[in-house]
Length: 500
Ligand SMILES: Nc1ncnc2c1ncn2[C@@H]1O[C@H](COP(=O)(O)OP(=O)(O)OP(=O)(O)O)[C@@H](O)[C@H]1O
Ligand SMILES: [Mg+2]
Image 1 (cartoon, rainbow, N blue to C red):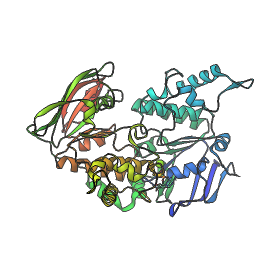
Image 2: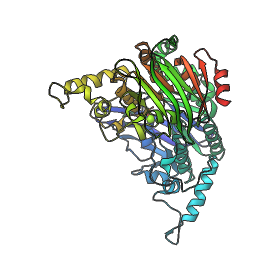
Image 3: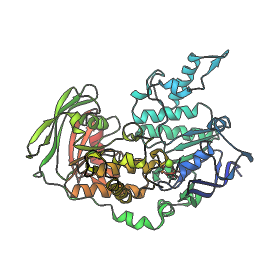
Image 4: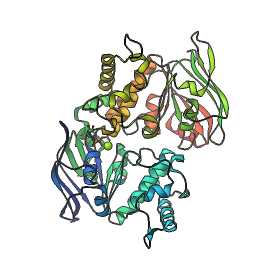
């Protein structure tokens, strides 16, 4: 029988009064992929942070190859053969790929940094993941998917015995994901033990042999993947909420073309990125911006909202008298809510509190009778309302947002924009990192926005999710808008349009 290379026994951990892990046993085996799953805030990342010496456990013990270990620092875990691809991007955007890969750990020759050798190894590891960019490329110039791959290559450099992927695929394209799966399969054959955290249920059945479910800091189940169904796992993760979820999946009726236009884009062009994009969106309409990764969807919304400069194009929104007026992309930020794909870069101020992150887009509406001063009670009320609405798991509003689980950070961003009564919402991968319960909540929020007359332009790479809310589709390919499809379009039609 295969020996467990890793045993974590009766692990407990609290943050102040918040008991996050309540005695968890976890085993991982050589040559196997263990799926570690559970709702947002269940304790998955905390468990792995303890394994990797980032946090110290309050109680319990860790054994590797049957011998107790205690890591006081992440480098000790790395030296013992454990690599961690973390959920949140932990790279330096102003540094090159090779510098990020090695940071303080360069290949040396006679005590000096051997830059050539470092670069060679860097290229080698990147190739394994099918990436061909130069090691000198600045990490900041890479998209979310490429940055994720750089993180993964960094983990592979140390030839680990145990490797942890914490939501590693959440920003990868389909081909990138398939490449990663091949690498994982290869590592598995080389007898590496892999712990794989994900919210994508189908991935569990594709690459994992065992599964462990956490729920609120306890073990809700453990089994061989071949013994469980999708429904079993959902049941273990969220218990009695299952029925409610399946009921929520209907989309609102299509909006008539007569409804007033709330945004009109004409000939939007950013050379080499997006080319001559024109479309309009009506009041109360949910428009799915569909396409494969690299088609230019994120780039389009970044151009519309002034996050990236444009070379050509005009954007119109209605003025006070409901007449369409031209507006510069930079001014759009005050008129649209924008949730971006990469919360680490565009979305959150990590050192700030949950409260400040939630209200930062809305300070104007929170001033009290004395101009310029925030009405503290109003601020608290607003935060609490939106925290409840999305069932965000926070211990208190003053905790730094970096101490929230990944999925709950995403909910704070959404809550921030929901408080503003804006006519247009642009959502780029709003369900990224959310568990299935929270995903259903976001879908519900989108439908509610639409019913209240807000227009929503949404990008979601999961086609089923996108299809569950969109009333019309704009399909992109290679930086261009290539087709418009009605809400009733089939999955095959959408795929065909995106592939062109
Ligand atoms: N440094 C910290 N300080 C305070 N609380 C923390 C800290 N790190 C994690 N927590 C809390 O521990 C709980 C579990 O968080 P964890 O990140 O382990 O969840 P998760 O299962 O990884 O969720 P997700 O799927 O959203 O990533 C959450 O309630 C979170 O707020
Ligand atoms: Mg997590």
